[in-house]
Length: 182
Image (cartoon, rainbow, N blue to C red; front, side):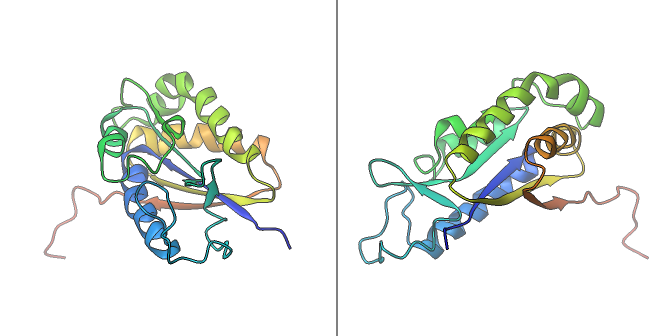
């Protein structure tokens, strides 16, 4: 049976911050160093990493991931952080202006400028898969990118990949007016 690949998509501040923890854990679980090389003691014939990682021509593990934020700050932390050599730079997508916690700005205004790029990069990762099983999407329901842009992105993703499963993990915002005395 062929390996089944999974593509993770991290959108907005919350989604990208979750990516930091997820990919650190995946690397630890699968014996992958922070630059994508496999630890020598790991059995390289064991392809348990293959749903989440592809192997490049130079033998490095590359995450099957696309990260998108309409504002660059959080993804810039990944570009300069501990795992900066793990991710391919083309999979880290940023805009120049955030959606200001506004669904409409994320879906109809600023998000429209970024949607084609995000879908193209997702298609490139999907094209590298032999047997794509599905997508896992991480985002927040609050915020303009997590709510508005993700809605726009998923509408397009569903039309391109109708028969592929999509699993979503979403962070819900805490209402501001809840009292601690309830």
